[in-house]
Image (cartoon, rainbow, N blue to C red; front, top):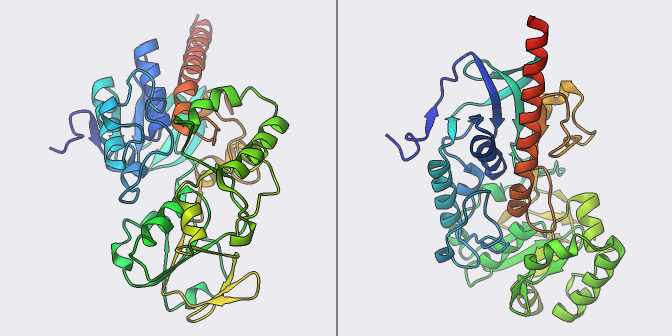
Length: 400
């Protein structure tokens, strides 16, 4: 038996009907399942392709820490232990999620990939790589980090150096003494560049296409996300202006080292492009003392070189692309008319995208995703239960 066998069964989804199926055993799916079970007495089946819950968290690099304060970042019904400290590590978060599944008594089927969802009468049929499963309601909570993606850079297939996605990065140690180009300016890119530049790599460049929104991890002794609920109530123009002013106070003038102020304001970028601010307390000193060199965007690859947008070229031995993920929802639900042109769900949380079909966890909120998942879970669960009640009433009326 494995550590998850007491709460989860692997493979062999039994053909038959479920009240609710939750696709995805990440934090969004776990939180909604918990609310359904403990608030409403509905025991959903959680289906996930991985062999353990919260798989994307297990795959994070060594040295990862939560960017939001652990005190605020718990799921519904169970806090993160205070002993984990203000910024819990990857391993502590994995321990928390495992304990959450056990203590909340959640029902998981692991190692099963959902391939397609189709309407089946008043409910839904989910085709998996094991067996079909029917459900009266489905919640899709597979997350924004479903499929790692590198841009289709010209010439990348002929590059003789090492090219990998940040999802495959675990620690800086294998890259000791090498010259490394990190592509991206989000939090993962920054963390990787910081690890590499801590007397490990011989040279570290960070390629930036769009200047990031820079914020500190804490201010005046308070975690920056403490202010999230208050900030979310303020006008966008005011948030953008205040953040720009505070950036100058926190970090000074950075245009000379390759990090000019972004054209869009911090909250405008978050709402329009889901661009999460970058924690920059350690990055800025490393850039100022040249341990990390900011360079322009990657345009193409040659045999042993990377050509940049400004016409210059580098010769890194390793390129690590912290270039984001695809949601990977097209094959699953693209035929249902519930996705936007860029593959994002038409709704996130209530209301349903289609009768009996919800998406959850597809946002990048200013207050942090875990906190947002906790707030979203009760609303999704309540709407699912209302749908089940209405469907049951309609069925009884038809049977009379």
